[in-house]
Image (cartoon, rainbow, N blue to C red; front, side, top):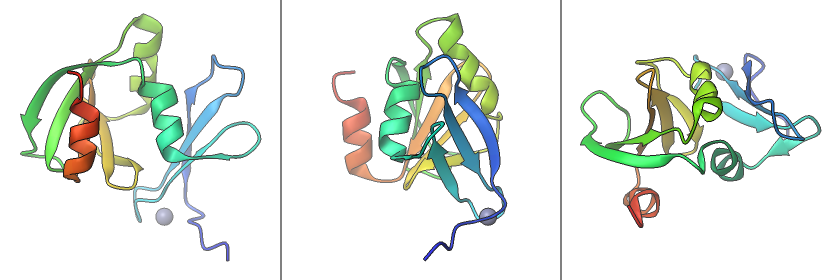
Length: 125
Ligand SMILES: [Zn+2]
């Protein structure tokens, strides 16, 4: 039952870890797949691995975003900021179902469409 999109564009999201993490995304059908060097990775786990150390700095209404709100995150250091190069300003990719990601070039922008996601992502902020 392999119905997956054959049109994925692959980007290395985390080359420095033992198991490099790759993001495959299709701009046509919106498919997103995360893989490491060996296998597929759960999207929630992958996003936590790549962005887990980012700090929530702002929450905005989703005026030009697919989700309910836009959450802006600051990378903890220069090296972490490099993953933002894989994202394109103004272009939203569905990093995991119901959670879109983008950047303004400086900050990570996440746009969740589910209030539960919003609550989880803003907890403790
Ligand atoms: Zn596709």
